[in-house]
Length: 404
Image 1: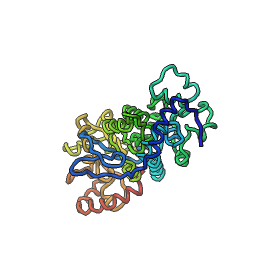
Image 2: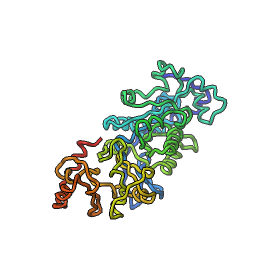
Image 3: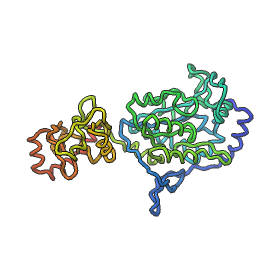
Image 4: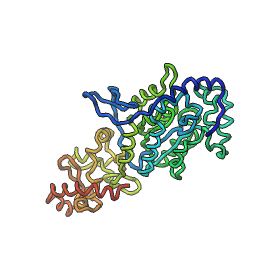
């Protein structure tokens, strides 16, 4: 049980929707395949016709992505929270509380990074001279209130505290809790800094509330250069007569983010995210010794890339001789990267990882193969099909054993 101050006007707004929220029932969350040839996208408890716009998708790279959860706090997600009367119906419809826990569990099980961006208000924040509509409401009802930035002793079991069921995940000693955002977006906290310092460039985003803090975080993180996917049923929003915050957010998620996933999809992708195993040059992480990967396919001899024209893919940084070459690569990276992470192809065929000599590079059957030296290249080519078959068989095991 926790307490907070609720003024009369807020009580009227919240009370008007409390009975509706209490009657709503949790819904099932499943993935949905295209129906009747029409592309579908997960929406609350069933499929929805997708928008006729690109859906880039996100392939999670282990070590490069993080689960970012916004405001997993009592005031939003507990029936005793001061905002429950307006968000509770949406929280129950989406199964938000349960779905957030599933995301926390998936991240913990896969040893993936987790960041929490909380919302706190201190006494001095209540002296602001002007506010937006919902800022004013939050201040009026004492939402996320704490006694001060240096006093955490009084937060336990208040509206600003985490839901109890999330505490084992957030308080695990690994989760990064960044400074509080003060309105909706992370511009006023250190989220982007902490993500950059951890080497994160992909974000799986969830939390509360959909059309306010989550959408604002999405927009800012995308502007900061992160690749962002939204877990739509691991969020929720206020419902007012004629105003559905979740629907407003969902439309913008689909039009702005790289993808929109259900919790089922997100859990599967987080759990299945693999590390990287790629042969690079020292701390610089340069692949193919700095040669332009596209040039192996388009020139008689490989061409040195420029240090100023570069792109990252699957744990390596590749250099390019021109912007045109870079664009060609980025349109289909898997076509141009070397087989077996750039390690010696013959070595992989005998189940060991060996370095390579770039002069052994050859393109056969539309794929780039490298070997450790000229003699090993001859052995590899003496039984090319057999060598490739054995290497293809061995590579998954080597990857699982050595990937980071």
